[in-house]
Structure formats: structure tokens, C-alpha cells
Image (cartoon, rainbow, N blue to C red):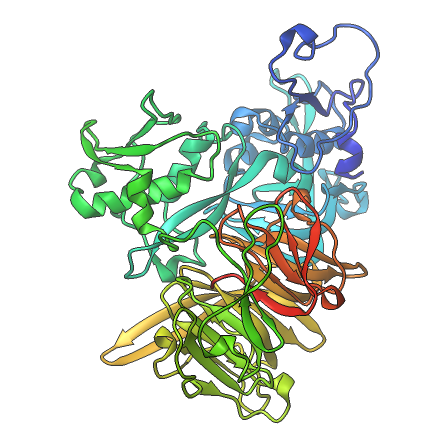
Length: 620
């Protein structure tokens, strides 16, 4: 009996199930917020994919409920917002209720868990019954709120029920004494109850922030009783997720927490959010406090319900430690002073060209200055730095990588890197700039595969340590994040081409600089084949790929691999590359093969721009 079937009704005669209420915008006069006191029980559709307007209220077990009802009722109660999961615990034995920790982890299944009939032969002494649970596991969420996708795999667990004395001691009742750890939710229920937010930490040794996506409750957290803002601040203070931790720093002193008892944080009438901290923060002031406040401001900007123009950090006695406004926090952004009108670039007849995409209609392409815009050395792929002053271009045959100004005329310098591979397809990938001004490219030579980083675009190329690359892997393409801490890699192993996110770590010993890309994590595990990827903000990607048995699609994904039903973009055939701006105001741009360069403006459909263009990129 699956969750989809259970969610479609409230089983009154069996005494288990949930009450599902859909918010009606507060219009109590319509009667939507009242419970009918007569009439038959009517079917209601289950929560839509991530529909945060649907509220589920758990129902306690009825007297003399049979074992099937107990298991079904508990599975339903796990999907509710019940404070402390108190109703869900009523389905458990006293010991199980004490030891169950729903906050420790979440197992996310493609659909709700399927409960099979109990195998009575598995318990010959008739002391209880074991109910198999099955499903298709797609992700887990750990105690640090980090979403970790997995390649869809079979989920097999069980719930065991036993009889225990009733409260009055005059009979017995069925209760659960053994169950899987944490919460087990179908994806629709997970997205209805949880939402993704970005925490922000500083790149190690640097003065710009890095996004660290986590999931918090959409509404009040049942365990901590905190509202979403307070949950988010608490998650920030707890520190970065385990995956990102080796590459970032937090400015908050170790052990810094919210002051005891704080469950609600709301900006005052001056749009200032005051955040009371414990004694660990009492001695912090000056620049360290400004950095702490900047982490908070960047973290809170994803919560559209919070209009905080500035934050004030308070010590354990309520004293003000520092204040920081949004404008002041901008100095800590990974992309600073960026022109709001980001312009994409592309290759046309071997030349580097720029598209001015502002407005409803695309403007004619513009030739850029410098040797890469002349076509004397035909280009196959390009990358433009974040300041839009320099570009890197890989020659049409893939052998040489050049770097040149695109604002002044000059002679083309010698290539900064060359590949010795025999076949053009095995030579250099398209390059990518990080926010530090370093240039990245992969040499796909089967005889010597290597990921390279060129300091400042013109320094001596550094071999990036990639222990996973020797494992029969080939880098098809790459894109580095603006903060320089994460890299998106399209990697082929055998017959599968997948999207992986790697963590960039840098160490300097004396004059030697060691750069590594470690701990690759799947970012699109449901896609059987990935064609192209582009960063689309601090923790979001645009991915072109195909699911098993499906057609090519373009969709938004978080860097942690999570997604939603609203992330699929309008269809487009034959896409070979895609480019997204860092902000939200400019259009997506793609190479659609026979149709050339096309763009997708916000709220519109794909529009042809340049028939003969290829390899579009935004700065980065």
C-alpha cells in the first residue's frame, strides 16, 4: 500500500490517516478554514510536488487499531508538521518514542514508501509482526541539513510492531518497537515540507563568500519549534556541510549559537534583523564581526519573506556587537561590481563575438577588440573573464590555448598551453575562468589526461591533482564557480556521461602551489547522459541532458543535485552547449545545432539570434 494511495484519502472508519487542508489566502468567510460536521468523507488529492500551501495534520491511533493501521498511520504522521512529532510518537512503544530522532536524517524516496503485508512466518513466536517497506531511494539529508543525491536504488527496510499493555492496563494495543532511522518521505512530501536555502561561508583565506545549500523546514520546525529564519541562522552557526568544510572558513567563533530560547527572528520597523548570540561572540568586534554579519546577510537573502536591509549582531547581554547593511556586504560577494547587463559571447566563423542582449529583442552581434576577434587564428571555444577585459580561446583544432585582451588591440601571444593528442576531439576542452582570475582547461589526451589551472591566465600552468581521473574517466567539459571553490565537470566513464561537482582545494608550501579537485559528487544522478552545463548563480546550474528512456531536456539543478518540478525549461532540440548569467535578469543562451545561437528571456520562449554562431558563454 503506497503513500500515493494513502495520501488520497482520510480513512475515518479505520481511525488512521491525515487531515489535508489547503490554504485559502486567509479568507475565512469562504468557509475553507472550517471543518465540516456532517456529510460523507470525500476523497482529496495528495499534495502536489512541493506544494507548500498544503498542510497535513496527523491523526492519533484509534483504540484497538490493528497492526496495519498502526504502520499506515505512522507513515502518514511522518509527513505532518505536528510539533515534536508528538502524534507520530503515539504509534511507537515508549522505548521507541524516546529513542526515535526524526531530526537525525531524512531518506527521500521517489514516491512515498510502499508498505507490504506482514510476513507472519518471520516471527514464529507471534511476538510481533514485521512489515517490509520498499521504494526507490533518490537522496538522503543528514543532520547538517545537507542534501546528498544517489543514483536511484532500491530501498528495503522494515517496521516491526508488537503488543504492549494499554495505559489502563486492562488490555493490549499494537505499537511500533523498531523502525528505520530518521524520517522516510516521498519526494513530493519532502518538497512540501522542506525548502532549499544557501548558507554562506568564506573561501579559505579569502574575503569572498561561497554558497552552501541546505534544506530547512518550510514552516515551523517540529523539533526545535523555530521559524524558517531562525532555522536558517541556526544552520549557518552550526558550520558548513561536511563536503564543503575543507575549502571554507566561518567567521563565527567556535561554539557560537543563538541565545538560549530564541525561536523567532523578525526584522524591526527599520528593517534591521537583530540576532542575539551566546557568550562565545561577546568579544568579537571590528572586521571579524563585519564578516559574521556579511555571512548572515547573504544567507538571509534567499528567504523572500524576510526584508532585512541590515543585521545587528548582539552579545549574550543584549549589547550590540556590530551592524552591517546590504550595500556594505556587497564587498564580500564572489562577483563584485558586475555590470547588471551581462553580455554573452560566442564564436562565429572562428571569431570571438559579443551579443548585446538587453531589451526584448536581441541586437546584432559585435566584434570584440584584440587578436581573438580578428579570426586570424580560428577559434573552436572561448571563455571571457569576470571583468570582461580578457578572453581565452582554444584554437579550432583543439591543440592550443590562447589568452588575450578584448578591450585593446595587440599581437596574439604564444599559446599558454598545448595538447599533444593526435585526434582533435581528444585535445583541449573549452576553458573556464574562476573569480580569482585563474583559467581552467582539461587536456583529454588519452595518453596523458590532465586538468590544468593557469594562474592569472598567463602564469605557468599548474597540474591539478585529480586522483579520480586515472580511474578510466575523461573530462568532456568543465565550468568553475565564480568563488573558485567548486567546479562542475561533465565526465565520461564507460558508456555514461555524468555531471559531477568537485571541491577545489589550494595549498601553498613555500613557493609551491598545490591545487586539487576532490570528492566528486553527482549533481544530476537521474540523468543517464549529460551534454552541457553552466553555472546560473551561486549554487544553481543549468544542465542539458537526458534521463533514461527520455528525450533531451534543459533544467535547473542545485549544486547538491536537488531539483523540483518547476525546474524544467522549455524544450529545445539538438542543444550542444548552454550559457547562463550570474544574475536573473539576462536570458539563457544556447547552441541549438542547426538553429545556431538561441536565447531564452525570462517569461518568454526560445528565440533565434545568430544562425552561424556556436559555443556561447557568459563571463566565467
